[in-house]
Image (cartoon, rainbow, N blue to C red; front, top):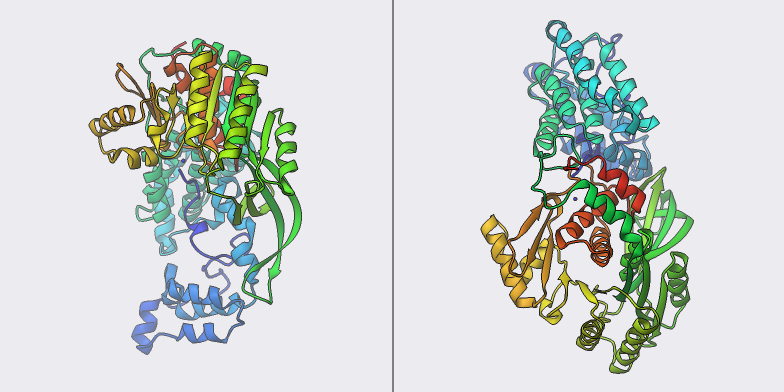
Length: 581
């Protein structure tokens, strides 16, 4: 699911605030001799690595990095002595703030946190050449600001206050520039902001302007490559292509409104996602590990429980059936399900733990950094006795809570056995209920089910076909339809969208509705399954259900962690798409 890291800020350690330690001599200092002059005069280079050995153990890794990256060899036209001073200065830095300072992570993720003076400059420009270059591009600077300003002025209502201020401040700095270096720095920063806001054409114009000043700027080159990869098939953009009328905006709008009428049973591996948040304090004396001070612990639905959560978040009715252990987490799982409006039947199995995936995270503002994950899970198949109880719960639930669809969610935790699948399939045939499968392998177990939704890596592994062309994609679909025996197959392809295969019908490809603003793909597959199930229960066609699943997934990938969306969010984002009314 695209990276807006901004390039260099995430590629090198940084312990300084605001970029004040960039290797640029101040006006009051005498001009430092270049590396070439030093070599010619002394025929020797200062031993910078020896300076690194003298510093404190905590700062040593950074000094070694600086030496290894060529900082001491004259980076940005600085002398060996200037680089040595930087390495000496690094001994004063905190190891913790360098490697675990989340402010730096924020700068790597969000362009609004990236201060323009952190963008690399072409310091090799001599002052005379700088003035000459700036005079050449000064008229084009006004044109750039005028052209890029029109789009945001016409669409100002959708910008947040922070986004609007970030753009305004950067444009003002760019307008007030009096030299080529500052113009280059601020133009690149403006391009990053436009990219983040998905104004791709405006981002390209700002990037091309910066490359006009310095054609060799690495950050500008990388940014242009990223922008060129954003195709017009990204329907989140105003330049989106017009699709064949397989569905219309008005039809999808009605389908979204009707999602709240669906009743779905979810059978599968119910689990807890445990988020343990800590505040970085120091490096442990016991081992070279970070010490966190506990802030809070949050429990949210995971696995099949996340699928159920997506259903209730969209206004649907959901009953979850699964297995838990006899431990401290069993009542917590029940409480989590209840909190999100999910009725449930849990079969207690003393031979296994309640499945919990614990993530240790460090948080700064709204940005999360995952440091460690611990899984409490059993992959062994449930016993025949537990299987019988589970089948009884499935049959009883459909008697007391009649459903329109059953979702089978297999996370390889041993709950989805052949006996459970057979019971679900038999129940569906008797009650004329749809069965939708979200599984990672062994697709042949799900014959005659309504729909199966593997991702591309799992589909390629199961079919033995590597997708390299439309023909290989078509072959993959035919093989999996025949191998699994399902009536329809949806393969999710990440940035390449989705493709639907139905028996007796041509395959249908749908590009992703959001390719350029992806934060976290965790749980997006659960969102697709849940949304499609509700859409199908409301009478949507398979293609319409695919479009709604695509739309819902395009929303949740913009959010960190395991998240869900709502009918309101889907309606709001639908209006931004370039689809026929």
